[in-house]
Length: 187
Image 1 (tube, rainbow, N blue to C red):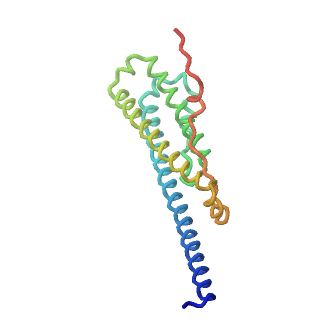
Image 2 (image 1 turned 180 degrees about the vertical axis):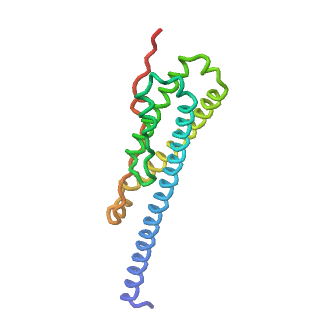
Image 3 (image 1 turned 45 degrees about the vertical axis):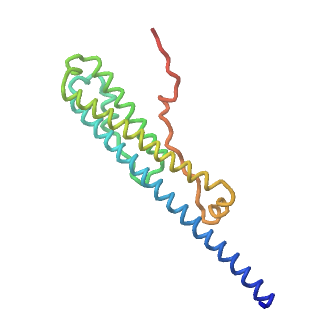
């Protein structure tokens, strides 16, 4: 027969081992999620870079027609992409600026039929649509990863580990302000 003290020590040891294994598993889970978030944020950075490159190419292709849009041109030229390590809010602002630049260029393209008929402009517009779709997909993946991570940060019992290890909620990549407004149709 096993001594009761040894039995208690075995039970306490097993409970501690289970707790320690859960702790390590939870910390590793948080770290894996952060890697997935960083990976999906990198996809957003790649898409934003492509988008900015498309904006620059469209600007070059249309600048002769845009002399009256000097202020818009200066803003497009002055845009600088935030660093990879920049906060999500800066990346969001950059995305909004690029959107406004693309909208301004598209307005000019619409105003000049000969420019609109240009094959290079058509190709750039088609490429821009593809880049926009990739950016939207990247945003969805990022926000999905952030949602899963944020849930784990705030839900018991994993929130105990999150607080101990200083894992904090991450910001979502939100819709551009202009795209949040309700669409109005003027007939």
